[in-house]
Image (cartoon, rainbow, N blue to C red; front, side, top):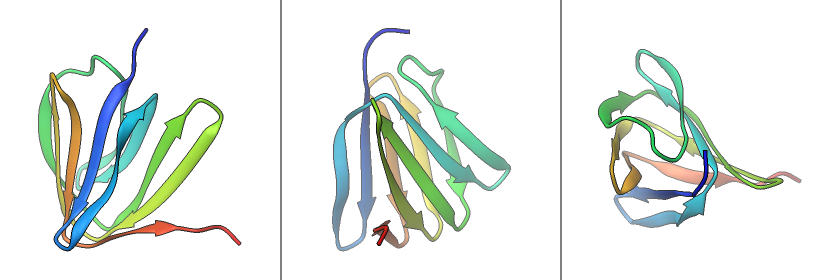
Length: 89
């Protein structure tokens, strides 16, 4: 599938990440899910867990503590109750 996925991760205090990526995996309350460009629209709540963002060979991870995910024609937006980037040592 060609193209990129517009992804935004927002916490109450600030936008944590915004950009065009290849794939996002997230912890839904009914199980983990992955979103690629062109994914069918849906909305779900999130449980505490790791959001993984893939862009080419690069991978970034963020810890989220609850919130909502909305997939629509514009991309994926996650509104997290709390979120922070996981920095590997």
